Image (cartoon, rainbow, N blue to C red; front, top):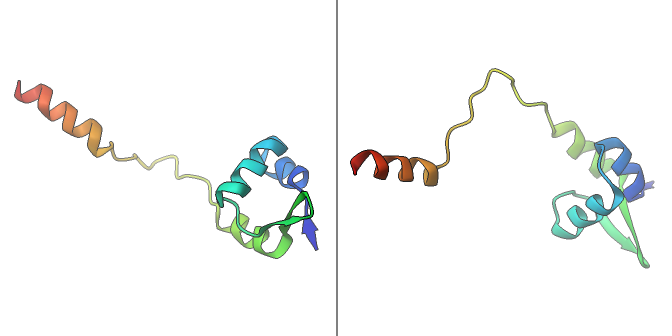
Length: 77
């Protein structure tokens, strides 16, 4: 069984155009072309979707190294 980009868009709360862009970029697994239409393999998509977990609200993301380097340069000056 396969899904359409519209089906996946509803599940991910995105537009179908966004889903097609992500399929082209390889960010969503299981995508293939059926003529001119995109399809997504349901089993691969379900496995990928299961791997997406909501972020831990208590986790503090590290600053980027680029931002840290700029901050250190300003402190040194």
